[in-house]
Image (cartoon, rainbow, N blue to C red; front, top):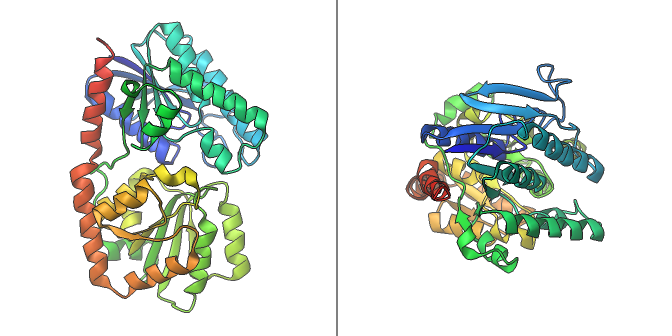
Length: 405
């Protein structure tokens, strides 16, 4: 089948969505599909376009064997509503324009957020007379409202109308989290239109590495590493982790390591420096292929989210990667995420945004190496059995092929 993937983010950009869509594109190609990707000119997360792509509206290239069309975007730091809207809408317009000159496809698969990518998918699917699959990684505008990114009642109303319109026009709506199904049903999306497409882990990439060797590479010696990797955004509530680190300042063997980027990173660094946390280190975002080694240097990994009803259905993809590297997890997830950690017996779940219980959980694992090994082994066995990305994709591929009939 000829499949057009539309994703605002795509490698060499980093982050969960870029990684997921790159993996999907390559898996589709391995299954014999003819795949083309439309993505933005690379700039995320820095908001800066490299010299290779600067001043170009469209760049056509092969990336890891996939045909990729990179289109113009108003690259910026995305710190204000106006900057974010310019960022999203500019890609929406440029992706439609670039797609208008392509040959016809049998399926257009557009991934959200941002939901504006859904508009690109809808317009191009109608121009090509083909099926539209809307891939939902997060519920928008609900998430933007909960995090305070979208406050105008008028804009919220318009966004909700757009959301309902796209759900009604899509032939299939794929969801990352099972709990999204009930929420979509309340939005009048038909049950038989919804397809489960959960996050998983690529075991050809993620596996345990030598922890001591990884620590030595990064100059951490014999420190007990507490790792957070991923987006330093509004949702994660990472200021609470800094407060936990402050509570553990007297224990010089414990080191908190933050890997990644995001809109809150500068503020977090300022907070660290103001308090004088010499047990906290921030490292830059790293390519996905380097993450197994980075995770392997950790003794424990943290999966934090703020205490908001929005996150009842949250199951961050990083937790599967932590488990695949046999790392125990301290989680502040609620709802489905909490349930999964407990089912896997792979970590300790605690109250969100509570620095005291997070700090005490770190100490508990620091003092119990046997528990660390047990939780790590449990998590590895769990994801190996239930969340192999290859198995998840095979099921999703069958759903896509059924649209051809």
